[in-house]
Image 1 (tube, rainbow, N blue to C red):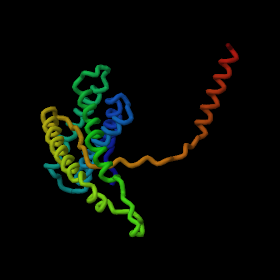
Image 2: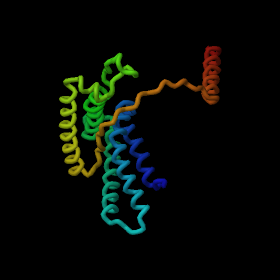
Image 3: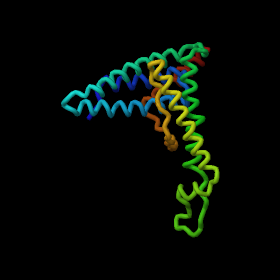
Image 4: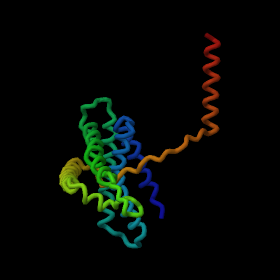
Length: 209
């Protein structure tokens, strides 16, 4: 079942505003989008349930109306974050959100799931499972407890800020960014045409000089 155009348009607005809010910095933009993606997935589930049911669910309708209003406030905050003044509160909030996801979530989860695997010649695959590898790392349990404690503190702080400012600050999840695949660059015909035009313009400019 496709989502309504109003919902998808709101999501596209958040994607564009999140890019503008961090001055189109690729890393910060991806962090913000990853933070806002889970709340849109939850809202999409509610929207589909409302469309599927014949009877009105007043509780969910009120929840979605409130969520939509707070998302519009969040878009306004993201737009204000794009101001040239770096000392504004929205700019600092977006910058800190992006840094929190990178400095707290990514390094720990990346190390936990992609830690060194010890070679075992007695095993056919010559590798250990993640669980076995984790048991041989004495400091891993402490890191997991630290992550869980930091996660709870962040959730409480973000929920308090959302309630007072009537905005949505997203949700930091224990996801692992997918590794970039090496892809060969495909040169399209339009790209060749642009390059040819640029070379011709440069040659013409040199001749005039």
